[in-house]
Amino acid sequence: MKQTARDLRHRVARLFYLSALAAGVAASAGPALAQTPEKLELRYQGWASKVLYPELAEDLGYLAPIKLKWVGNTISGPQDIQAAVTGDVDFGGAFNGSIVKLVAAHAPVKAVISYVGTDKETNGGLFVLQGSPIHSARDLIGRKVGVNTPGAYEQYLVTAYLEKAGLSKEEIQKVVFVAAPPVNLAQLLRQKQLDAVFLEDIIKDKLLADGGATLLTTDYQLFGSFGYASYLFTDRFIAQNPNTVRKFVDGTARAIEWAKNTPRAEVVARLKKIVETRHRNEDTSIVNYWKSAGVGGKGGLIDANDFTTYIDWYVKNGVLKPEQVKPENIYSNQFNPFNQSVAAH
Image (cartoon, rainbow, N blue to C red):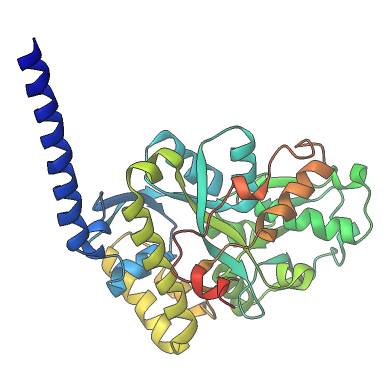
């Protein structure tokens, strides 16, 4: 019995020695080995006629060795992030207000990088046809307004426009929001099936260029420059694949900065090439209307206000209870390579 106990102690001591040796070898291998992505393929959903920043990052070589696997297109941010929760895709992106709702429903997710925003050059707008009797917010009472997803960003912006114009809650409830794919909204407006539509970034600019529409307001006019949509992963995915998430955020952040600092003509040419070579039967002309990166924080860094704005809105409208959701539980900049440089200032 004593012999067995002694042997056991020797085996345990040897295991500790081997573990320490292995740790030393791993440490001497440097950060490259420690940062090796655990998962080399990320499933995702695209958007028709748009190039997402992760797609641009892959084309620029910023994601290597990770590759993206397109599993189809989505027309809805809420659907996209729900697909991430259920595991149908590895990451999803949506309006920050939709992410707030998801976290409020106890979904174990974390937003890691902002990828859509508004600035002076790139913004979304509310349109009516030229000659329409709608000239102001009050004229929208009882009218049909087209948005891509009920209860998401576009409805939030239209509602904010109505509130700023002094409409009561009862009057705002008389505005009828109709959901349709973003690429179809302009057509439905021209066919007079909708009285007004909210269109984002390059789709908005294409409608303006085509003529026949009048712009009532833009999100930039209402709130200035800010980020309003983020990519997220589930907590479980992040725990199991931290290096993959870090590489994804790093590559996407670098792609955002590349778009900000590269001549517009070069960016448009690159985006057009990406759309043409992926063969998804898309309208390649839309990318010609790209103007700017349209992302608030450097490299997609998330600001707390990107979420508190919608938390406050939902609390005000009774969707959430006070303190039900806190921004620090929704997002993290820990994987963004630009985080430390910002913190150092």
